[in-house]
Image 1 (cartoon, one colour):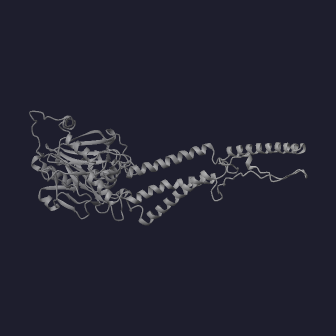
Image 2: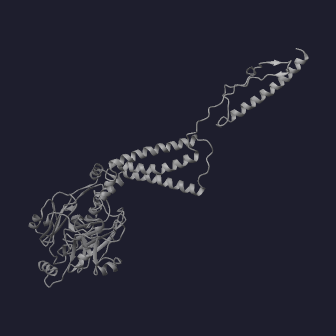
Length: 540
């Protein structure tokens, strides 16, 4: 190689070194930016070697350098993002679909358990919507992860916080609601079904969410096994006590509250708490004072208990009695007494309007003023047994001193309750327990059994409850003793002493068909037959 050729080779070698150096720098830069979709990169196998550079021709005579072969640099295939949503659009789609998915899932669970609220065609539409929106939600997440460009801030910080709080509460609410209705814990389900099914007008509420099988399963877990047979009137002593007993009876702590009283007192009321609600227990010492009263516009409209007490001569206390049926064009008026009703040995109704409970039976007072609880008896048979006044309801809580067995909540849920009982000494017990609009406070069947037993009831039964549960007394007693305002109770002389609350949250009772009224008209003759005749004449 002559000197000229050597000089030219040195120039070429220097240029080649620069090219190789630039190629290496390019490769390093591309490797560091291999996550960027708009850049080129090299695989690890794409190493640069001098052997890859081929000099095709060098003509010293023409002093012309021919182009060299370019390095075999590979390009990464760019992601096809043409059909994907932008990041902002994918976020909007996710928010929209997430707004509907939890609610549709709740509706799906409801429709799965009952077709009462959601009919079959709508149930399948809900399934299709739920599946479709779930797919869209998944697609929005996929687009967010794979779309080009940076996400722009869609919402201000305050709005983002509100959205996060809303969606968190909304989703948690749907989860809690679903778990309450259909979760493994049965307490809420049992309370909800039994409370709704024991009401007269709100059974549809549990049928919205549960099918017949679910309702029957709940009722199997929650029911009352009543004592067998009917009451034995011979075990009750209603004869007047002419002389003071030589030895004071041994009363328990509960009985002392009602049985230690002034001689001329006709009744005494004690109050206490039951599951967060106030209970009122009245002891009426002369059972001859008790009678059944019915609405004055029977089969047309019910009547308030205050009004029934106000038009009963000599009345001083009253409670609601048996059940009733609201139907026809006057819903909510309580005009049709349930089952058998007897007043002064006259049959008022005889099962012609149906029986809404399979438990219990006839709840009557005999000519001897004994409270009798009769199973499977007709109205005619009850009158033949000496029953003068009676209604129908249940379940029976205590029969001949034997307490009912209560499983779960007894199948009647919790809430406002009314009960009547009688001690062996003849004393009649009226019991009313308040509740709240949600029926989360108040008494269950086992509470009624224990209360009546504690106060010495030998026979006792549940009466109609809920908004009907009421105890009425003269206005001066209600105002001065129990602090009632009595401004809207539809009677000038009587008022409630408890606090009835309707399902809508109003502090008031409702129209009912029957009541137990305690009344007394003084007479010159102390014989009970004369007293009864006097009361009958006064009614007429």
